[in-house]
Image (cartoon, rainbow, N blue to C red; front, side, top):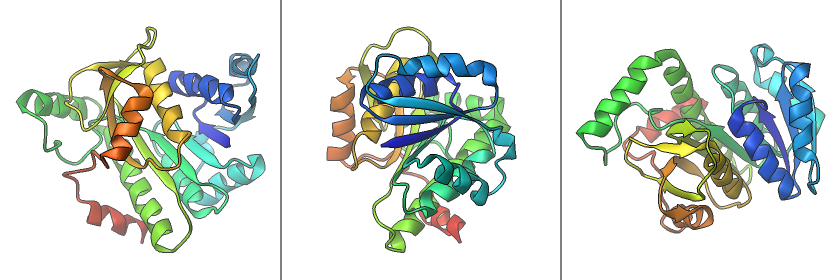
Length: 253
């Protein structure tokens, strides 16, 4: 597999790239500053995979055609969006319409939803409201991207365009320490933290399978990464519950 990583210099993206390279993936990491290239390229040292960088400012990613050109130029079969704001929808539109692309993973966050999750208690809802009110523009952009990925993946499915793996991975507050390898994934309570290394491990485990799609909240927990990912597949877990999915589908029109 070949992953095109939008926002390749962010901490989660770098951690993901290192793990994907260990699994013999090819990585193209999109960065805007050539000075970032050495620490991206060194991730491939001693691994069976291969990595290269593509210099591109995501502010210039205005249309699906712009993103299609990047996928076609690199030959990527998987998209990972680890950047902020508006370019996400262009990347999603391209990934879901190109037959050569079969996977797309969006790094989001648990407050990216229109209403509190059904299982949340009063403290969870308080935290959700605080986060949404603290970062309204980022929150709105993430919600729109998450919903658009749902819509476009469904449109591809309904058109008979083949299997497509659409994942919104939604880690809670990030920590920079070493990963524990233990997480809680799927429908979770709101408060908590999770190590960047553990986020990357879950993302890579999901992308290494072909049978996991949906919205998945993530925080530190007690389950091993493989066990957690297998669990959400086996139990058909999707924390999109409580959102208006039918309204999302119309966004693809």
